[in-house]
Figure 1 (spheres, one colour):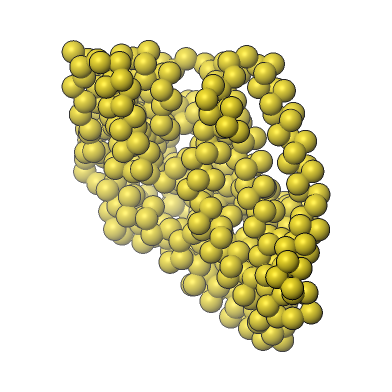
Figure 2: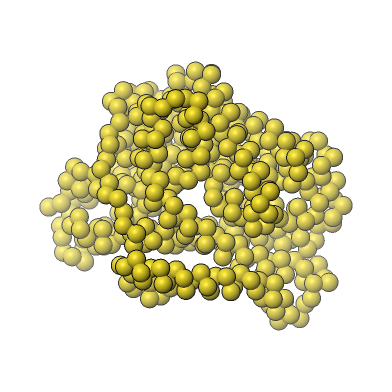
Length: 348
Length: 76
């Protein structure tokens, strides 16, 4: 890592050697997580029969696990992202049959690099290239919700079925919500300056196609940037998860958030919408609650509402959208998540 | 003198980009006129869709993410 900072390799072959080396280390570390956690709590003279021992074990097991997963996923997706720039995604979406476009917009939302601080430039960039409002909104719903970190972590924690369901229902929700928003003809709820700029049409910028070493370097830069930014959220999430895991009685969660509690889904979404953390921080909480008997569908709905709708993004979007449009957007997405939550509970 | 504009709404990456350009310019003793554009309609005039964007002498050279030192050096 240190050598890398001094001089990033400039040849594809040295990058591949470095990646092979790091992958080996990664696999070795990932396959010894339980031993590591056992060893650490034994240092404290604890074992897993006590509440504290169990909580600490969860913490020491989950912290390296989540951080390793996060690093791996962000690096791989960092490479994929270099193939899907917002400019290319926009070109794919402009001037195509609308019915195909909703699905395409949702899928592209999942793979296009997206940061909520770029939400407005992206939004306007899409509109001025002639991408309809509903399809642009489908993209904006899917981008934070079907994030690759969510899907890979769900896969690692709960298996492919849960990950596939989250992905499929998430895409379906973004498509249906976009179609409904189109039907409502909400173009008059855009801020005036957005409408004015939209009439100027799209400007295209010429960007050079990156080389492989540049793709790797960009992926590594996103690891440093994203892991460096989200690790505090992750630690807080794991600490909360550890507390739940060690101290919350099983029966309580099964009663409060079990399948029989019909009001659990709307309540979970109600709590999740104003909450703001990232996927990697919410997964350990989901994991601990699931272990205590909470229904998986309710938990996935909670997770969707936390990552899909966030106050900071709404504040940024407010610069381009009138309050009424934001309220409609939040209302439709939140209702969609509640429906999806019930469906999850039926399917799983 | 190079005229450099950093386009961004004030997120952490945009601030880092400004700082990095200042650093590289100081290291290489290049005089630059560095301005930060935070006004959204103004940003959109350049057609960038991901911030931070960098404009050198009126031409967009970068969009999305903090540029690395090597890239900044080529602009100067």
